[in-house]
Image (tube, rainbow, N blue to C red; front, side, top):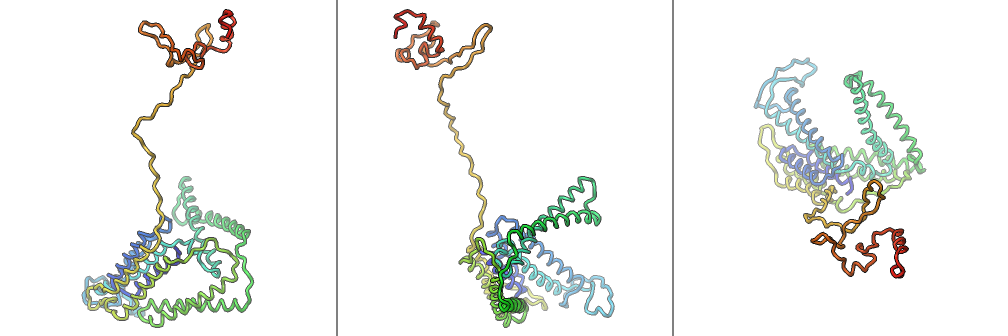
Length: 441
């Protein structure tokens, strides 16, 4: 599925989270994003970034509560929980305090505000865990080709820098030198910088040999139109997004956002004419991508609509302090974000190796046949092949050999024939010493 669909879905959830401070709705948004990530992320390295964004959200929430306790809150409550020693500040720092009274209303307001910011980060983390960065950069339009190449190179070089730092620190520890501190950092940073420069020069030469950076000639009027549309469209997107995320301004935010998107797409399409590259195996925007992106847009639209007719449910009161309630229709709209868990293709899972077939039946013995084995020659004796006992005449009860059967005695190819194990020379000598009657055939 197209990587941009996951980002549109996540941005829709983030837009919905920006329209409310109700902790129940924010928790429902986090649960929806977490469930989709759990069932649709792959085993790729970038899929593990969701845990880091969860931890980052908790850190942001803790920092917001810390600031509310030690630096005060814009909400002056009446339920004082405890009082901290207040640091006196000069007259020019009016409105800022360190310490003082800490009220329940101020802490609850900070909790709601921090939870909203944490939800935004978690939604972005869901997009990072579900969408491949390389496929997303590959889908960039031709006008952003150079920027995409720069981002890909930076993403490729970052792991090499980390590996170089770890390798040099291990080498310093093996030599008994310190690997921590400012001095060690400077001594490690110089070889890392030198290796990065050498790698950059080699990469630049390889890219130049492969034709990277070549552009086509376009008329000056088309270039100026492209610049105006792109810059104006991006400015409209920023203003429209701010209008949607702000508490007020949703009326002009959506039209401005749509107009900015149209202008930006037109500028990018015109700018792609100067790029002469070809795209190998482009990602198709199919039905599933439309369903995933549409579910995020539906969640955002329903939440924006709910903020106009039920603001009290989306913004629970802090002064006076009241318990939040879960509104029915906004919660049902948030559940639409679960559609990617069923519409998106399932990630490939590694198949376990098949066990080897085992059988309890004993293995059948190999078909036996008589083989000659050499006998160890004694003193004064020549080595002669000794035949293993076959199905020929066996000693009888009295110790005498039994008479051979007629079918085996007459068969010269049988192991029981008298000349079966006689060397060819011995056979000739026996015929020469035999009588006329015996030697004749």
